[in-house]
View 1: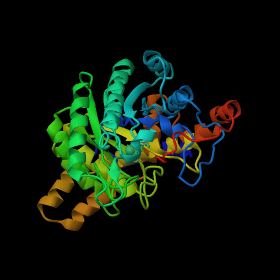
View 2 (view 1 turned 45 degrees about the vertical axis):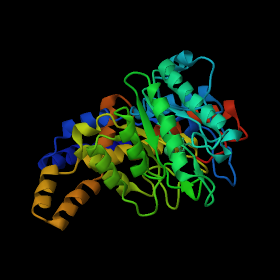
View 3 (view 1 turned 180 degrees about the vertical axis):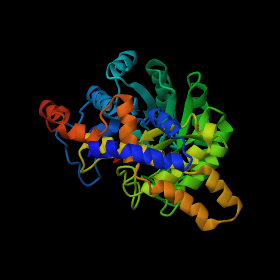
Length: 407
Ligand code: PSV
Ligand code: MN
């Protein structure tokens, strides 16, 4: 398969060049792509019904770092790993940073866990109890300190806060508690770092959610300042929501901080990104490419919960799908698109998009990998390699999941 793709590259390059695409420029951009993988995606996770243990699934932060390093080695574009505290809690965070570096990666976003302590039953920072609000704030500040020690530039915040019944709590008081906690945390952000505020329309709260949508997250970030931006998790929207449109708007306002990529069919399903939603992913990347410099600091992270699929292969597939979507977006003939748009040529514009989307970019990606000095076929290498077999033997089948919340 690899040879077949590499052999197809010259013809594809010629065709693209004829279309006016600068293929060298496209390859350069693909080589610089950066997809962050989540430490929690390497451990056992699942649904609230059952967690199926995977032989070799990482059992601790050290094994998660090793796995993330392995995915980077195979793809060349996953040079950082997001951590979740306390799931990845350790005594010495400077040592953790060095350990990550020994695997060829850096520590990426730091995610405080504000949903698993007993005290958080009625919420974390929005909890009616001042003591619990304090506890949650102290944890967010602790995570800012962890950022200093690990060299992380991103504090990634998601709150499970909300209510289940009418009258359970004052929506406005909760809003004020959220604003206060974010304002206090903002003061502790390390220099040159950012706070990313994630939204989700429901779950685990079902009546109200304190940050349910991008508009609420955006309003909060506007009040906070330049270091606060919105995080778009592709699984956190109601059916039919046009996520690329949200992306375009936030980018133009300078308020898109990053992504949690995954795919969904019904709710926050956390499936492999680009499986159910390849066209959506392409359109998201199209908006990012269109935004040019305004997208330069966007953080691309994967946030998935692998339930029935092998963890490492799932992560590999996810990274590859992000590469495919980006490659296709880079092939959009922007001049032709602008002309069609100006002329009101609805279907002409659509066809420009489809021309790029329908291009088989596998030969291009195989060539990019070859030029990066890695194998053009990461999945093929993974399947032949003994890494997965070795860790399955060494680590065995661990019981229990990370936390218990299904991603
Ligand atoms: C919540 O569903 C979420 O998307 C947040 O990003 C969490 O940090 C992550 O999943 C892991 O539970
Ligand atoms: Mn997320």
